Length: 145
Image (tube, rainbow, N blue to C red; front, top):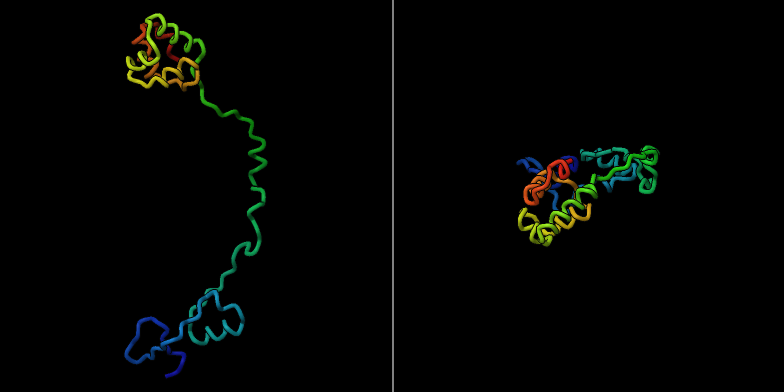
């Protein structure tokens, strides 16, 4: 049989020759013109694709939208509890002679949540404000946004 019909590890038919000890060249190994021509004569599949920006270091180039991001002036932040609401919550708690832990236990929240509401650090949650209103019995207009 000729070398062109040699099998390098695929399925073997009854009339094909199996070559032991040799392997087919990998696509990355076919870099010279003579190696590519020899592989084509042997009938091996060759992938000849040009890589985009091969050899260029694109890591440190500026992105195209950097100027758009630099021109962005919108302030993105979450709304916090108003200081007046925080003061009303604290005064109502003190009027009932409760600690923050007591108030938290009454509204089924953590003490840290009550602390954040009293320091105006919490993001307003209508459900928590309603429960605070019911537990301290104040007007809803002060607590709700």
